[in-house]
Amino acid sequence: MSTETNLLPFICEAFGHNKKIRRDIDRLYKIKKYEFYRLARESEIYNHIIIREGDIHREEYAKKALGILLYLHENPQDTEIMKKLTTLIRKGWTRVYMWVQNHEMISVGKYLYSGTKSGNYKTDDDFNTDMLMLIWFALLKERELKQDEIFARIRQVLHQRLEHSSENSKTRYSRKTMEEDLLQDTHKLKQRIYDTYGPVNSYDTIFHGHDDVFAISEPISLIADTESISIPSVFNDVKFSNDDVDETLGIYYMYNKNKNTGEAVKHLVHGLILKGMCKAYKQVKQHYFENNKETVFIDLENQEKELQRLTEDNNILNKKLSNAEKRIQEIKSETEERYKKKIWELSNRVRCLEEELEKEKESNQELTALREFLFSLDRGLVPKKIEDVPDLSTTAGVVIGGHQRWQQKMKELLPKWIFISSENFDTRVLDGADIVCFFTQHLSHALYYKAIEEIRKRNISKIGYINSVNEELASYEIAKILKN
Image 1 (cartoon, rainbow, N blue to C red):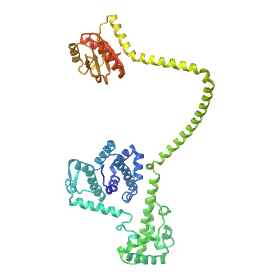
Image 2: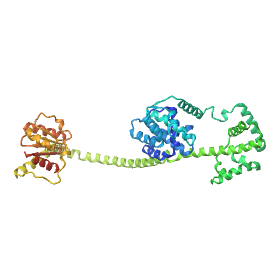
Image 3: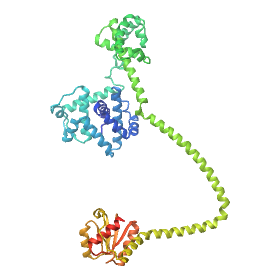
Image 4: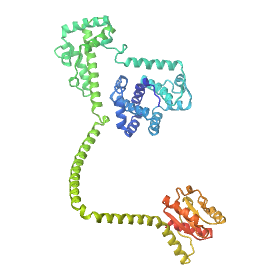
């Protein structure tokens, strides 16, 4: 999979934004969750601002998508995961999927303004993620992108967002990016507030001891009550720095251009409450991603405990094994000389018997088949049609021996079988054979011995002998051999 590096945060953001595919992401993620998590966690994109700036659910699914995409980048040959990802894209961005599938040249402008739903986006995020997925999926499918005006504008916006998300971005408002004149006016305004209300560094220093400030903050506390939230409890671990105050008052001065202390205090109270809630929410998200099941730490801990238990068991077994080996060595030393000669004799005898047994095994199948055949000849048995006849057409069978005319008739009954009449046959025809039958009415010694040798090499278990010139009776004989 080929993906431009600077698109990756936006792709993950798009997956995190699309709520209707979150269950599908979960199912896909479970397939290789340990590997997906490791790849995502080790990536510099894992804590990218674009991924972290949304709510906790959006960030969770963006990080899951990051692991999946990084895995496919390292394992492009895993067609199963790629197929599931493509299915997920089709569900989440159906129009994008169909457009890319049906066009070799992708024009973002034409896509945007075509169809009855063009421009019908509920939010800016819906528009941004749809455009991003169109561009990325086109790259994924190796389509050519038309460099039209809309594409250029979207590319510029993505570039600006990347710059804005940089830690040292000059476009992101913060204490570091405040101009010197604004900073000086902000410090003057802050000093006037501190002279009246004292320094601000926590929730208590804002809201306690001043009735006019309490009148500003109390309505916000009542709003929090409606959601069963206590602002003081939420702010327990939140501290405000001088930079926090400067940033909040700087916004007031930028938009109002005055140093009205009363109005500035209202803005400061509202701004710090919002800032504090953002800080508290960031703390919650950080705790969540350090401790939730997605990090698989619980599973790893269980595995470590199981590994420890197995290690202890292994140590006990090793100790027992060591004691047993010592005892065996003692017994061996005591008896070695006494029974050395006897052991050698028995071992030699066993080897001879094993060799004989192996030879016996090789010829057992042939002898059994011959015995059955000779028995039928001795009793003058005529092959009869049997019940539950096996389907010979699905059997990989070989018939050795027989005149050409007889073989031709048999081929009409068994068109998929192989018939051999000469010892100069290609031995590879026996590869994969389920059964080999010898036709005794016309079979040379040379052909028989060559075939038997090759059958032994391949360890073919089904061997039989047929004697009927009548092709139908011969097929009954084969069926009986196969059934038994």
